[in-house]
Each structure stands twice: as C-alpha cells, then as structure tokens.
Amino acid sequence: MAKRKVIIVGAAGRDFHNFNLLYRDMDEFDVIAFTAAQIPDIDGRKYPAELSGKNYPQGIPIVDEKELPMLVEREHSAGNVVDVVFSYSDVTHTHVMQVGSAAMAKGANFLLLSPTETMVESVKPVISICAVRTGCGKSQTTRAVSDCLTEMGKKAVAIRHPMPYGNLVKQKIQRYAETADLAKYECTIEEMEEYEPHIDRGRVIYAGVDYEAITKEAEKEADVIIWDGGNNDTPFLKSDLEIVVLDPHRTGHELMYHPGNTNFLRADVFVINKIDSADPKDVETLVDHCIKHNPTAAIIKAESTLTVDDPSLIKGKRVLVVEDGPTLTHGEMKIGAGTVASKRNGAAELVDPRGVAVDTIKETYKKYPGIGVLLPAMGYGEKQIKDLEATINSVDCDSVVIATPIDLNRIVDIKKPSTRVQYELGADAVQQLSEIIRKKFQ
Image (cartoon, rainbow, N blue to C red; front, side):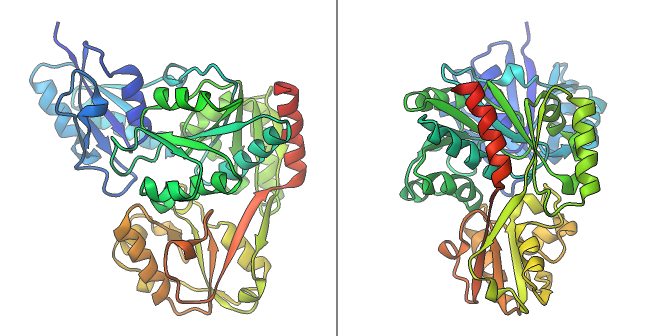
C-alpha cells in the first residue's frame, strides 16, 4: 500500500510536536514537508534527521507556507493521497479555513488534530496555563501558580511551549536553572522573556523540541509540573487542572481564534486579566460568554498590577514605549503594560518610531500595520536584535519605557534614559487561584 503523503502546516513549534507524537516512525505516512509562517527566517531549514526517526535519513524540509498549493498539486497529480495537517496557533477561524480551502482546492485532505490525541501523559500532577490569545497574561499567571505551589511545599517545574528557532538538535531538551543557561542555548529575546522570570525566582524550566523526552526529564525533579503555554495553543501535556487566561481588551476573540476557542471550551478555571485597565462593559460581556459557553468553569477576575522603576522618566516626558513583540504582532494588541503605565504616569506624548525603524523592524511594521506608535521588542536573531537597538537609539524621545518581561538594557545598548515596567497578577486573583490549587493538590 502506498504511503499517505503528509504536509504539516506550522510555525516551528506545535508542528514539530505533532510530528514527533503521531507521525515519526509510522510507516504508513510519508511527511514530505513542514511549512512555516508567523516567525521570521524559519523556512529554508530542515527538521533534522537526528530528530526525524528511521524513515527520514535526510531530515524533512521546512518551506514557506506559500508553497503549500504547489506541493499538494504535485503530489496529487502523481496519484498520491495527501493529508495537510494544520498545526499552529493564534489565527482566526477564517484563516484556518482559508489555508484549508487552498489545500483542498488542489486535492488534499485537510486535518485538525485533537488536542487530547497530541498530549503527553505525565506520571506527575500537571497544571496547564493557556490562553485565548497571545498576550493575555499567561506568564504572570504561571508565576502566581508557581508561587502558590512553592508555599505549599511542593517543587514546581515548568515546561514551556516550544520556541525552537535555532539548532534543533541542540534544542531537543533544554533545562534552564540559571542565567548562564540563556547564553548556553543562544536564546532569542522571545525565549529569554519566557525563561528568565522563572530563573529569577529560583525555579527550573524546561523547553525544546521533543516533549515526551522533556517530560521524562522534568518528572525526575518535580512534585508538580506546570505547562507554561505559548500563544493560544492547547497544552502539550494532559493536565489535571486547565487554567485559561482571557483578555477583556479583546472580548469576543475567545470565540473567534484557533485554537484559543478550544482552550476556552476546555477550561476548568478562567482568569479574566487586566480588569483594571479594561472597559467594565467588556469585562461583563466576557463573563457572560464564559457562563454561556463553559458554565462549569470557575471565573476569577484579575487586575494586572503594574510597577514602574522610575516614574520621573515618564511624567511630562516624550516617551518611546517598547512592548512585548508577539503581543503586538500576531496577538494584535493595540496597547500593553507600557502604554497603560505611560498614561497613568502622565507621559506628555508616546513618540512614533515608525519613521526611523531599521530594516527587519521596518518590515515588521509593514507586515503588522496595526501596531501603531508602539515598538515591538522583536529579537528572533542577532540581526533583528541589532535592528531593534538601532531603532530605539534613532528615535527622538526623552526616555524609553520598557515593558518587556526582561530588562532590554541587558540585551541591547540603549543610549537614552529608560525605565522598566513590570506586571504581576493582582493579589485578590492570586488568593482565589491559591484556594483552587490547594483544594485540588493539597
């Protein structure tokens, strides 16, 4: 019997996981390509032979998603059955079916895999923190859950959704326990933003490519594993408690985006974050959606508590606001913590950097024109980090407001006065989360 040809449509994360779990070493399938979207410069590579299993001694090519119709047409014309497997996150339901329609128009089957079928089962208890969109506040929720478990006397070890943008063989299993590990694994800004807060709290976090192997390593030292989700993807681990974070600045998106809508319908606990900066009507509409679509889930309303290192660098100043990159790009947020902090602390003006944006940062604005006057902290590679640095230093402003999860001054040379904005889940929400976790895992 001829093998079914498979093309996995992805963005260097969920796609690799789906392959590892369901297609690697399966003789009835022939995965001919991964396609790439969302993340810069991930196409043109290969998923390496060392990770691909016995059937792929040359590895598997990673091509631009634009090549999908051509690949399907070629295989279909040769008489092959082609399955196109959609495997990335934070896109509208319309986008998913546009990709599906392009594949089906050329003769392919179009598949969405069950989240349950793509979950690794751990021997340790698992709490997952996911969201309905990028930038809802998963990280601060994860920190609150970690703190709660520590107070209960349990060792919490986090496993982070993949961000394998470098050497995939070296990144098969990554363990982060100290700041030096960030340099060891040649982390991008996006990776550091997720790993460093765990390290700063003295905790271990795992990430990488092969999540069955990663889970086995984490189990050796964890009392409880925390799945620290990425984008709005579903958990890679079967969870005993699924916490899903919602954003009232984007009310309605919980019903419109894939696979965040799946998280929304699966959740055991909703955390409606940022209620202190959102329109109360949007908060209440979001509560109504929760009750209507997932009435058994607990609902926690949370403030996102902001602290500013030096408010004097904001009050009355013309400021450049640097926000988390993915939140502004495929997360489509129009404001972030830096924007809120700047307005609360009396900034005279938010300076527009677009006129002096350099190279890859300029291209980011072209690709995501809705970003507006905010500067996304893009840093998927050394070149983009240098472009970010050059852009910041070219802006005519009084000071820079840094609202990324890490202090950019450690990564780029900012030649202007700067202050950092940090954010944590509000105390009332933390207390409510703690009560749920203690009841479940005491």
